[in-house]
Length: 259
Image 1: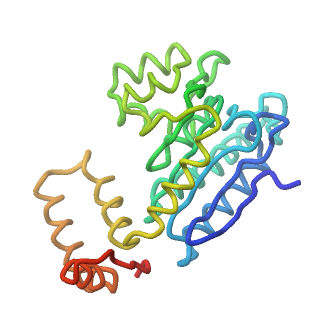
Image 2 (image 1 turned 180 degrees about the horizontal axis):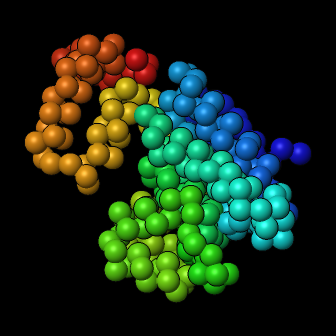
């Protein structure tokens, strides 16, 4: 049975963590398959949005402490294992396509950070989020030290990371960590709705907007304005912009094709 499943329909690639018997806990095989799926999503021009979710009773329980699938007494293997996960995280974060996480049940440790690497997060009211690394004497990985400080500031990030406390979906929404809370059993349905909506959008424009937004915390307004101007000069040449312009003039809904 694959540790990660994929399904493609109508421009949306679904990437499914598939170790339900272990609450989708992360081991070496899962990371390898996840990285392969993310790289395929990046490369394939027919993929216009990605939906990430977990099979079974929860999103992801974090690293599989019972069996990572490596020799954890070997520092080189540990580093390579983490770097394999980093490739997947960077792929989700830098992919110039919308990426949505649909979270149900627990998102813990590295699983929590896989969700935070996505552009938008839909979570069920019973969902929970925890940077639980400190509870087992470990350091956050897969971007946790980056995502939390960027999303909620250093003080709140330190609280969640140092204590390893668990927060519920409504608290995560209040903190600005997720986009929407839905009823139990509805995260996948809502995630698919959102992914389909974004897959029908102007993919090049959305991807370039994502790239520029990622630069905003580290550069000046002047630099962002220059990126916007250069980006707009490129986007105005796309077929989607030409279609959008025609549709606006003709007072109809545009039919974007992602190029």
